[in-house]
Length: 125
Image (cartoon, rainbow, N blue to C red; front, side, top):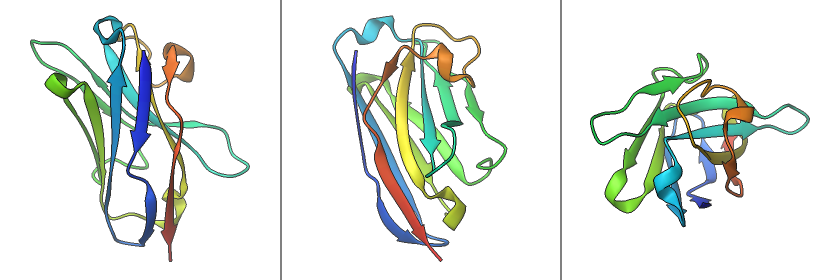
């Protein structure tokens, strides 16, 4: 599975950005996709995840982004989105998308076997 993330950029505090992650290759083996972020000098942390199934989906969010970020997916396009609103300077980080062949422990980095390259989000104050 190959993942391509894009949509990062520079935005002022309070603004919005939408990140996209397009999956290609053996996408049928992925059951969930997630977004993580890594700020300079910090560990990579969980942001949001969505389990994927033709009967429905479940979403998960870090407390720090609940109510501001929304994860969604378009199964037909094999693409996952992260809509980020009310951005804060502390949201500045490189954002990574990831895919998992399972739906357990989706808040853990180790649950994801496939990672895309990062896309930088910079929020100015």
